[in-house]
Length: 325
Image (cartoon, rainbow, N blue to C red; front, side, top):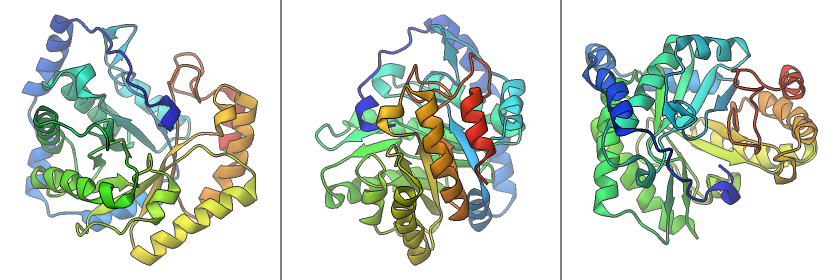
């Protein structure tokens, strides 16, 4: 998400009994994905290739995948099928901060359930295990333990041929030298429990394109990189940014997904201006074969795709998306 929107949000006050009731069935369900991944060989290049072939997706921000109006709820496969029918081939979501969810398995289990529903509908899923990591506020041991719990839950319960796992939504570090060892620690701890999943990481400055260019890929060969972009601009400006991203991809042989694409900050609540930005950006990204994941179906008034509560974009945004080729 853009830096100005990254302040902590208050946790949705889901009732513990309601939450536990919904999560128990998910936790007790057979780990079919784990059985599948044990029964077949690793498909690293296949998944990396599948991500590279994606075209357009959408973020489901914060609590929306599992809750609304302070109540836990399941969107269900029908909602996800409608999202796919609206033109999206993938979805991105991430589990909120431990301070908001608690450090137990209940909330992550509901995100795992939402992931399974999206996969059933035919979508590829980019699933983040945590929200942010700030250089000036490093995780304590309790936060790392919660991360490890989430990593095991998602690794055991998701299909590595349909789900890409991200340790983190966004880092915020002053320089790449400080971020690199934290990135590598996050990836290593996730890889220890998810040997077959493709993992995704980004640059130290909220996953900006600038900070990606400063990075070398990790030693882990089964990763992809992500970029978040809220700059808008005309076609020439978009090409200037993303030609560099495509060149980085070619140099390192690492697929890149633009996993958050909004309009300029001035277009955050201005749908016509945002649609104009998308009309400039989406054709460029399509030419460069960079998958784009729009921010976001739901985020209050800020870059909100959603038309009411339905899994479809507002008309002006749908028209901009339709013209992306």
